[in-house]
Image (cartoon, rainbow, N blue to C red):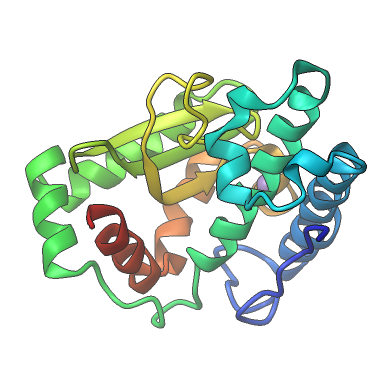
Length: 210
Ligand code: MN
């Protein structure tokens, strides 16, 4: 079954002023839609992958033939990453707070919540060109911060430096912020914390730990 663009769980203007409605609209209905369409195009006629989930596509990228792997890596990654990204955000004041378990794990891994936020922002700032900064749960359960180029993600074993299950991620492609912030990526990264959906991060953390 072809992949489809997910609906937003909030209105396009619900994340203002951190993220403006026009950016949300173009980001999802143009950029994300293009990843979905191009993923479906790359998989068209590939019966072997007809039942694969999006997780499988990312995790087992290495077993996909090289002739179609590039397109699937870019567009499957793009679809996975953005599908998660929309859910990781909520209107200001509605995203809850880090759970006691997640807070303890963040303190243990990074020293404090502030130090964690600073490290994740640094990972996003240091990403040259386009990509993502992530908080992941590694095999064994430890938290780590990592960054990937383009539309790669930490599920793509064999293709990324650090493998793990993403529980939080921020898009640092210019298309995610340029209309409102122009070149000021640091301002976007700072304002983004206001709209993080900690309830979703907590849920993903608990699931990854199981
Ligand atoms: Mn994006």
